[in-house]
Structure formats: structure tokens, C-alpha cells
Amino acid sequence: MIKKIKDYTTTIDSFRTIGEIQELLVSAGATGIAMNYENGLLKSLFFRLKIKDQEFPFKLPTHADKVYLKLFAGRKMEYKLKQDWEKQSLNIAWRIMKDWVEAQLAIIQLEQADALEVFLPYLSCGDKTFYELQKESNFISLMPKNN
Image (tube, rainbow, N blue to C red; front, side, top):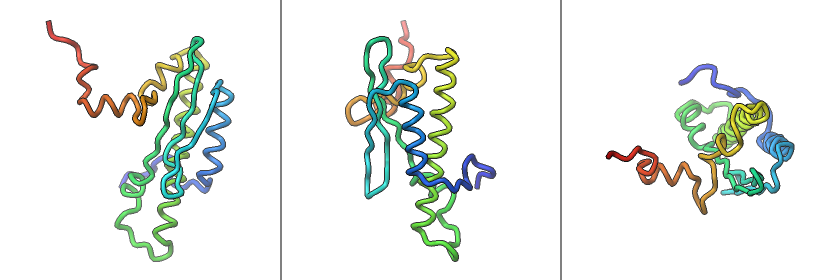
């Protein structure tokens, strides 16, 4: 197991964290925010940002199931139910995402990068993100062409 993973012991509920992420995005100029739930759990947050007079849609996914597998699967759950560990995984996943968004917005604010540069992997391209589409194609379109 990875030791001292960020936000591992958070007591902050994912709903509160999602509200904080929304506040951050709105203060950064988001023009719309929507959420995607699966089995009652928030899987991804969608938002639109206006960049140089054009709106771009982004999708921030979390993978609480992977957090659960990495941190809690196979542990003795004597004093906690599996649902409690799954909820904690969701809390951790969203808290880490909030920290990441906050850091990226600081980079943008300090003009170390622009918003599209930072959020490009999360650009929403229909049902998938730019990153997911590139991964499916083995990143072929990103590879330099041989002459």
C-alpha cells in the first residue's frame, strides 16, 4: 500500500468537496456546471469555460473504484462496512480532484499556463474526453510523423 497518500484520512464528505470545486470553477469563470451520477454516486463533473471568446466543455472524472481497490480492497473490514470504505474512497477521490483543480487554477491565474493548456486532457469530445480518445487510438495522432 502507498503510505501517506494525499487526503487519505479526509473527513470531508464528497458533496461538500464538490461544492468547493464548483465555487473554484465559477470564480475562474465557468459558465456552466453539470454532474453525472452513476448508482447514486457522482462519477464526473462537467463544466464550460470561456477561453478567448469561445466556450470549451470539460469533463472531470474521478475513479473512486480505483481508490477503493488501491487502498481498501482485501482489508479486514471488522469495524467498518464495505459501503463505508466505498464512501471514503469517493471522499478521497473528490478531495484530491479539488486540490488538483485549485492548483491548476493558481497556475492559470499566475499566467504560468492558460486554461486550455491545463485542462486539454479533460476536453469533452462527446461521451469521452480528449485524453480517453487519444488513449483508445494508442496516442497515434500525437506522435511525430516520420519523414
